[in-house]
Image (cartoon, rainbow, N blue to C red; front, side):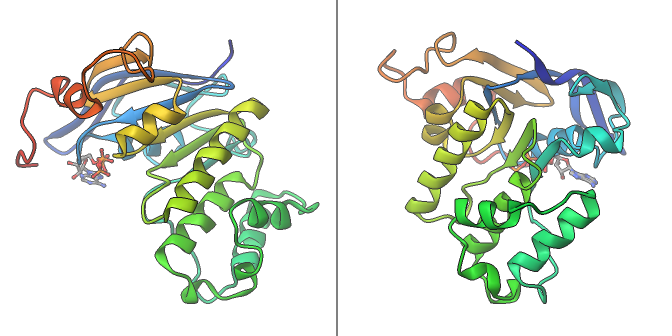
Length: 245
Ligand SMILES: Nc1ncnc2c1ncn2[C@@H]1O[C@H](COP(=O)(O)OP(=O)(O)OP(=O)(O)O)[C@@H](O)[C@H]1O
């Protein structure tokens, strides 16, 4: 297998706050890796590091075989939908995607039409983003992540705010992207959804990896074991729900 993302011993400190304290994780081409953890565990931080938006305080990160800082050629092969997607709300959805393509220096060649269709925004793509619902903005963020037909796809809580049809759509798109050969890193608090779409799971707790492996190795494959996903999740935290962040 080919690794599209390798993080080794990643540390990230914000002042006195050590958010990540030696996190290692690998995403293979054609595989879906789920990133789990409580609010504030550092999932988004790790994803920001993997997309070149944040710099690790220590450790080593390789994206598509190349070390950070990311070369524009590498960045052109990475698609990401991180939390709170920033769009120009006065643009149409189509216009926003065209701007992103222009910034990446890529030709359209039908990409915009295809991604809008894939996320169910064919009609809405002609409307201004400010008229979109939260779920529509989330779909547009997914379209933006797919636009470059990336080899590494990073999706931070992509089903947030989506209706059941949208959740199913995200699941199908993830499967299609993995079948195309992309490696996918996805975070979510919807444990059942993670168990459905992921090949491997990495859990972050207190800045370190508290569990990792394939669904089989972790006893989470459908039909295996008697422990609920929620119980499994909390077994790999050493705190109770509702801890102070
Ligand atoms: N720019 C920043 N400056 C200071 N602290 C930050 C910054 N970004 C994130 N943090 C802190 O890093 C920690 C991890 O945040 P992060 O957003 O990565 O968590 P998360 O696992 O994605 O959480 P959630 O499930 O709520 O999305 C939090 O304590 C947060 O306050």
